[in-house]
Image 1 (tube, rainbow, N blue to C red):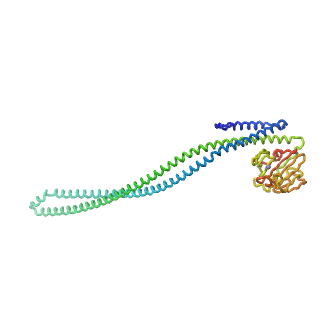
Image 2: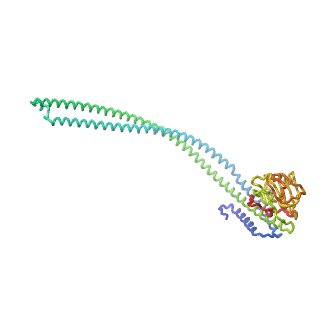
Image 3: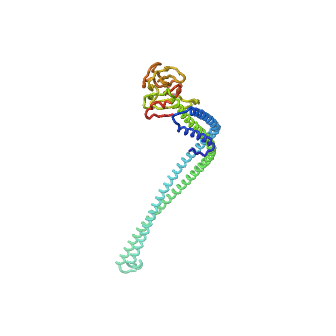
Length: 445
Ligand SMILES: [Zn+2]
């Protein structure tokens, strides 16, 4: 059931086991409780109370042991805090450098875009140059063809024509020469123009190449500036790493101390669990003893007892059991009842017919504050305490369900509630064994 590798806790688990055994032996109890059993229960209660006190002392000791480390913890936390401030400063510096680098990156990208667009322009110009070169080549070809054609159509040389006697042929020869010359002249001009155009395009390309060179220089400059920034960033990061390492070391120390404190916390919790178990066991014994109180021949409750707060949203905030208030552990001689919707001023009714025996309308009255006691006869009395108003008087005969007061917070009370006590033959008994509980009643504690 309880598996824990920590040796220190073994003692506690042995103790817990003992309590569990005591509690489980109780669950096979029967109605009749003999005097021997009564004595045994009372002895067990005493033992359990002793255990509770011992465990409380152990919790105190454990807390004292843990508190020795308080100074260490705060000193280490202070150190980490101081280092963290330094780290924050480095982070800020690095963020500023990163922003600078981002600006430079943007500038580089801008220049690269410019270079791209220049490359496109150069490509375009190169294409134009190729086109024009093609045109020149075509023109040369055309010219060559014309000249060849003129030779092939007649005599092979000008001299040959000059020597020709035929007037008409000579005339036609001259015309053809003139024509060829004119065509050649025209082609020559065309080629020269095209060559000029190529020259101007090449000059443009050179201009653009110049621009590109300048831009590449700019990128180089920017890259250098970026490198400087990156070097600065690296410096800051290295310095930060030193601090981070120091912080990690201190954190390790802190973790170690916290682990020790955690162990103490676990011990305290185990002691507290043992206390809770013991308190539960005591309550069970008290209940058994309360049953015994009612098993006497006289003083038996006849007829039903209704719930003293006639509402559907009441709950038991504190049961009839051993409980600790301000460090004092003692039997809670009754039950505390509250309303979820708010208790102060709630109507309180007589649980059964009877005569008002006590009706305090002021004062602390031993801690009960304003309270009413109703005697139901047969040794049975009911107590209604911490009222904000008492609405009956001593000697009044009240029937079951009669409003006798209003809930409040008078006397030794911490928040509005009804303390309801049931006494039979001078002994307190657990009212839960007698009262008719409202449907769905919650028992909080
Ligand atoms: Zn109470």
